[in-house]
Image (cartoon, rainbow, N blue to C red; front, side, top):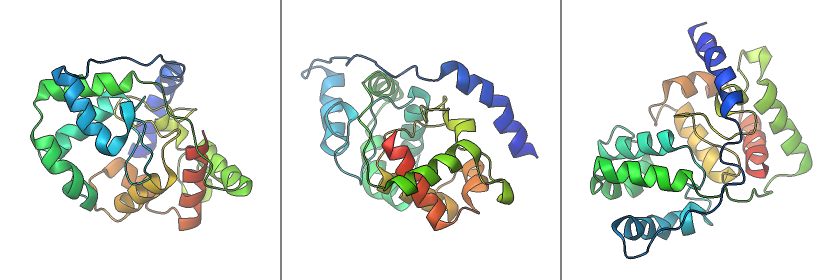
Length: 208
């Protein structure tokens, strides 16, 4: 009940901010500036201006600034301890000051969103859309849209999911489901999702 009340309380806010990042113009940064050099370092894995071309690494472009900031701080203080966090991000984030983290979060949040992909077929995408918009009432699983926005655009510390790589999203759902990543709200939601439902919803999210 507590989880459902939390989701209901933020649903109206998600509607209000929905689509803020859509249609944003690219924000330039000087390559020889401190921020520019850090952005280039991030781009080694996350792509130019945060638009990743590798399914291993998430898109950062158009991600919500509060989410990026929260995750970078979790990497820095090592409270996000899933295997990929340890392998890729603990060392990188350890070098960042809080001011740099805030600058990076602001910068990437203002970049244009990446174009969605199509790794799933029409039937899978349709099933995923249903889970995203309606949840799974039989298992008391609420709609993903309640927290992540009607268009998957994210809400504050609830991340943008639209256009994200399906393999990356699937891996994150699995590590949260198996409690390898500390995300108690999400664990309560995804713990009863089947593998087929996960694969369908990430196919839909990637296509958005």
